[in-house]
Amino acid sequence: MSLPHRDEWNADPRGFRRFERTVRVGSGDAAWRQARADLLAWRVKTRSGFRVVPDVPAIVGGRHWLEIGRGPLTLREPVEVVAFVDEPDQVGYVYLALPGHPLEGEETFLITRRGDDVLFTLRSLSRPAPTWFWRLAYPAVRVVQGIVRTRYLSALRRGDRTTR
Image (cartoon, rainbow, N blue to C red; front, top):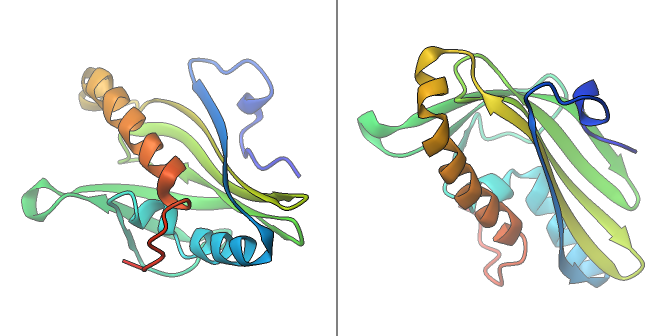
């Protein structure tokens, strides 16, 4: 199943930047079960420094705030889960950035089993949100986006499987 929600993924991206990377997070049934549970519990986000509000599993139509920072320096990113897959060898979801998010676009988190390998794929389409502030801040947002993607890609490979 192809999870990207927007038609732009396979067509002309109209100003969207594409990103896709797949990493191996483990092997065997235990690694699959752990990665699946972690993905569905938003641990890719929480292990990367975000809080997810409400802290409930991703379901299509679910709206969440992805929060990072503390007190008055908290950035709240509104998102909506727009696609979900749960098959024997693949589980994941896509969320769309809603108005108020610093970016316009979507992110896909997907866990796949290929033989004994458990793989995590991160995909995104993004461009600056249409407000003047986020367009102006876009160069800094891109730097932060790169740092956060690195955290996402290592979030399910950590030996520490504690929940935050």
